[in-house]
Image (cartoon, rainbow, N blue to C red):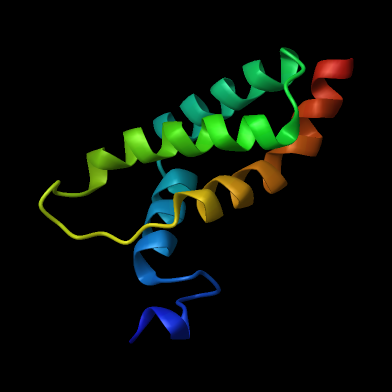
Length: 96
């Protein structure tokens, strides 16, 4: 399958895999959730949070792949999806 065809609603299989791992690894999920929660509490704009979460995802995703692999992960897409899923919840939580 070429990247232009996409995979399970994602740009490609590698991007889908990283997103799947992020959402299914308990420790990693809560690590990124806590990190995102702190950024929301600091009052950073949503776009800045996305950039920081994107960096975090890129760094941490090295745990699931061999550095010699030629993964074509669209980290921005994973971060945007993550932020869209949790941002409103965390924003509401921070305002309480």
